[in-house]
Length: 147
Ligand SMILES: Cc1cc2nc3c(=O)[nH]c(=O)nc-3n(C[C@H](O)[C@H](O)[C@H](O)COP(=O)(O)O)c2cc1C
Image 1 (cartoon, rainbow, N blue to C red):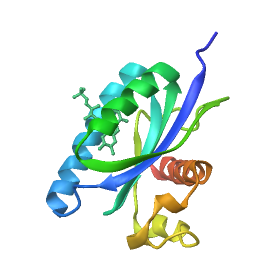
Image 2 (image 1 turned 120 degrees about the vertical axis):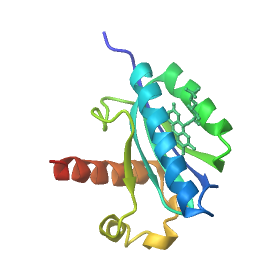
Image 3 (image 1 turned 60 degrees about the vertical axis):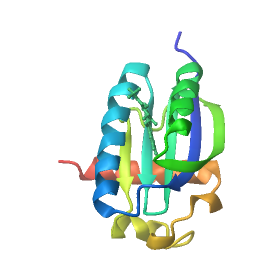
């Protein structure tokens, strides 16, 4: 029998954005650490960010998702971590992604046109469900464009 799988959605304020080089290095570091830890823990998900915010979906067994979220909340590369959703789910939305990442390219930004502009992506105006759907759509697109 498989463990109950939960989905956690949050957004936060990106504190690394004042310096573009630092921002790129920190994001690389976050993704590398996330992929190792999440693979070990059976967590999947996706991360999106722009200069102002991070938003992330974590999916996995409740205990490991809670522990990962505790670590993430302590991280001083962001602040004002706001939980949008934490709920049991029937199946994972990102089964192949230990931590997928979707930067806000111009093309992706166009998809937010009805909720935010590229430079003004504001996840606090999205519900957890909507944020999850947006990340899912972008992830499917990215998967389809990988050769
Ligand atoms: C926006 C953001 C997202 C993160 N996502 C994850 C994640 O999905 N999994 C993870 O293990 N760490 C994540 N981290 C990093 C953790 O905060 C922490 O640095 C890391 O888990 C420590 O791992 P270590 O004890 O193996 O060094 C994230 C950090 C930030 C700022």
